Image (cartoon, rainbow, N blue to C red):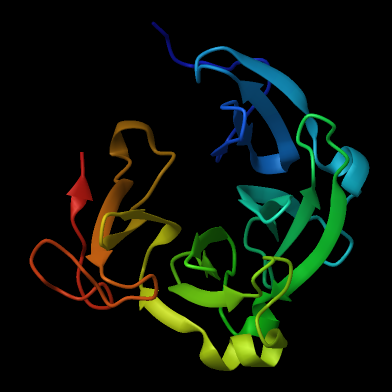
Length: 235
């Protein structure tokens, strides 16, 4: 049994969770903290990726590490993250990586791109998805959810920044917090919409689209395209 919250020792917003090869769960949060659990109920604080990777110096002055996404690609555990602050005119996405989560020797992977470089306003909330040897990154917040490809090791943009800028694909808007999973022959794109942080007046909700390819097209339950519909609320 469990009660919420399951982890209270530190603030832990925007968690991303990965299950390692030994069956343990690792959760990463805004500001770079991470914790480990064997049952998703009892969590132990393990550290902060910035303790060994160092603080990024390529972002807007005053930006913080937001909304990480943890993935294992090849031999590396890669923590993709946003660098942003409220009303940031030019946020961006970077990453840190390590080979052993328990050892926690994180290395700075640096910047993948700034909003101005990829030509997408508010380029935050990265989510990376590996499928049949291809690595995709979904990102964006309310100014469009886009997808680009990374190199097969997940450590750089496929073709470089100019290729990514010219070949990025708009999937849907105005949403944020994209997440993709594959079940059988379908890909499911989850996104969020609405206003948050207003108690019972909040309208924040999760919506989902389905497609036959990781880059779309994605349709809602009415068969409407994600590029023009209001999605389907998940309760």
